[in-house]
Length: 78
Image 1: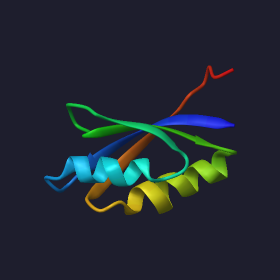
Image 2: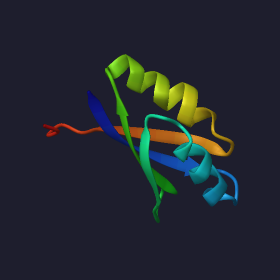
Image 3: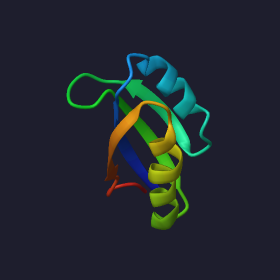
């Protein structure tokens, strides 16, 4: 199992709508609003790195308003 944090920048004004849409994705454990260069941070899980890539590109990346993401893989997960 691979876990990661995905930082998400949103173009639109409706960050809450994007966050709700992201929480509907099965692999997303939780989503939080943050301040700074990115608008949201999501804790995600996947079976492997290939699945993580698909999650970031094909699911989170296609949420309305997403303009960029940055994926940070958790290194110390038990």
